[in-house]
Length: 109
Length: 225
Image (cartoon, rainbow over all chains, first blue to last red; front, side, top):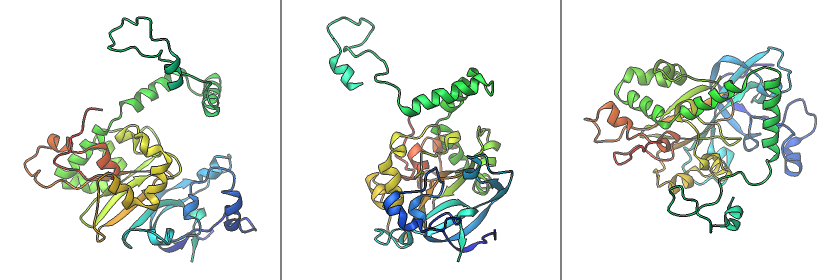
């Protein structure tokens, strides 16, 4: 897996290993079953990586199923403009959101 | 609980120092699904001797010992000590530990400095992540869905309901705590406090100023928690 570097990034709308389009399925079936730490309102949105967070950490979502196998990757601090998340956002175009995202959820564009 | 109070017979005399009669203090109804799950998991962990009842009790004591007074002391120190402020912004957790505040979990703390250009607001859309080591337990509204949904979708409307209004040249920056990180807002030091002692300054720093729903003000007073 190629590591994202600071710069523009994109959230995949779905877990990459899935072969069908969950972005459409969300409307009918909601999120995939389980507790995911990337909220649905950010899936598929475009943001910028501000910083890589040290030290590397285990993948909590895999760890929850006993599958982390000791592997560690990074969280990235991601900046996303509010107008990117909400097309009809009411407020200043400067307004934005910050969130830490584990790198398996990031896709470089 | 209300239903029980309504059906309670108030005719008898409680005679233990109350002005008015009240219902029996009790837990009404059956425990919910997650109550039962919590009890079952806890009992299994104790049975397997992974930890004991006393460790659970001690941890609850630790949680209950944390109040916004800790965060307020941190903020006041940052206001009067630029070197500490720099360390706090560089690594919130180690700066708090240096200050004597222990962290009882694996979370990191990111301290967000309000300026005349950026106002920070914290939320946890997925659950109720909150900087508990430095602020204690979150207020109920922080944990409820209206705040969690609206803080990220219409933060300025939420802030306005708290009486906080910014012009458009101030960036409202919302921080969604969803992973291993907790946030603490470092409010701006109010004007007119140049002569205040560190202790007096800490008295102006309320819980809500450190969540970011209101600015610190010379009129704000942190009440005993």
